[in-house]
Image (cartoon, rainbow over all chains, first blue to last red; front, side, top):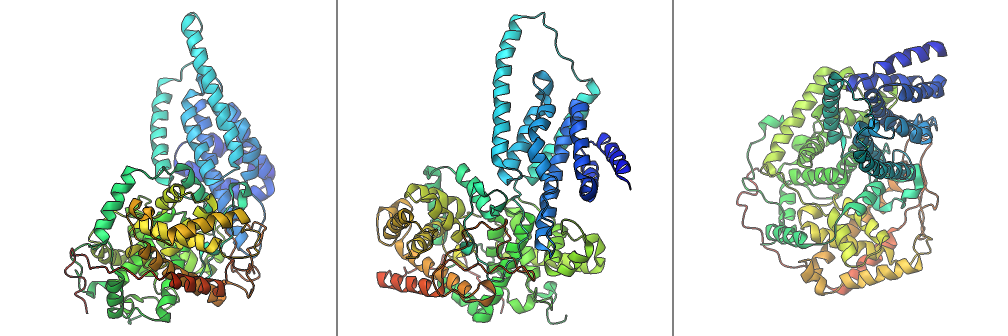
Length: 258
Length: 363
């Protein structure tokens, strides 16, 4: 297929994108397949559709990006273990570069972006925990969304004082219901995948111990080991030793020691 | 493949009462009865644990899932002899029990994966040439392209072993892990983040031994912190071991090697930490002396100061062998063991817990 045809087919897939895994995987598989010849071009299509589509279709694109990043990581990891590492980051570099712009479109300022805010946050948080892209970039965007929220709260107060201001357009009813269903599906899936740690393809030697592996840190970017990512996340999330722990400790001791 | 009985021929119920922990003596007894002794045994156990590591790494299991899978594997073979479950002629003869352990663990920890999904990843690990042929960009094996009879047989065996496994835990799906305690206790005793990080890894690796089914999680966590402090207080010219860190590690080492208030606070005993430390050090020594894991440094040397690509560190495909020296060598570790003996903490007497009457009915 020539690049023009590739682009046309891809746009078709993108425009028919919905919340189902089937439709998402079609887009992802196509994008990965044609990364070599037309990656940049396909990426541009994605960014454009994000600007043009309805608010619902834009969140569909973001969820699709989530799967695309996941697939890109898998492909990259796997190719690094074969004899011919491709050394490419698939679409991850594009995502890192343009994620700010994309979020601007998926969560436009004002009331219009509200339906997409929570989901977008969820996705960004999960990218941060899994180190899908540089956590610093994600922090910046999350901060931006927070300040926007603050501004909006302030604006809301102003609005209440001025009832004559025109309200922004609502979504048609059937779109709202469709959106509710899609959200339900997606949250279910996100919940099922929430525990997944960054995936690694190393083939361990038969006595490989994690204790012997070098220490890596958050700043090491793609070189950060999965074990350290998980430790780092746990380090942040774990509470201090408290009464509940003392109780649990007593219980386990009772089970263990006669 | 007639060496193995089919799982349905194995007598059904053996342990009637759930026994969450075993005393080291009980482990010895059961091991002797199941012929689980000797260097061959150690090797097999490590292979199975490494397989579970690799499986977990590919699926992205959190640590608790992989760790419990390993513990379940050990527990299973205290009740069922290995020779009855060596179905595969290949070097992955432990696969059935390992996969069943992984499956039960995913249920216990709410990180569900279906048997077919587990099988798919296990095929990718066992048949790398299949992966190469499939040209799947993510290196996945599509189970639908494999011989359906074989897949179904494997799946049935996995489920059959699962049933037996559930009996050995008496359908008790709770599992307390040491990992969060490593962080909590590390914080409480003033350990630095790096020591805690190393302790966390040691806690992970400790699941390659039977320690987690012999001692409660808080004790395992403390022991991990203790061994981490031992390792970090080793004298080494490694740039990783900085002065201040070594000093802080030394303080923790001193704290946990003697009786103190901490024993009361964490409801534990220094003798138990000592016992676990020996087992873990044995594991580390074993790993340093096995040829596939390392090169030949005779001097204490540090891991490369250059970060290596994510998780490709000990990767072994031809032409890619990484000759990273290990951070500790057998001599240093053995010397640590000798120092521990000098502290002379005699192991505590432990009574078998009364809950279990029928620890083993099988012969």
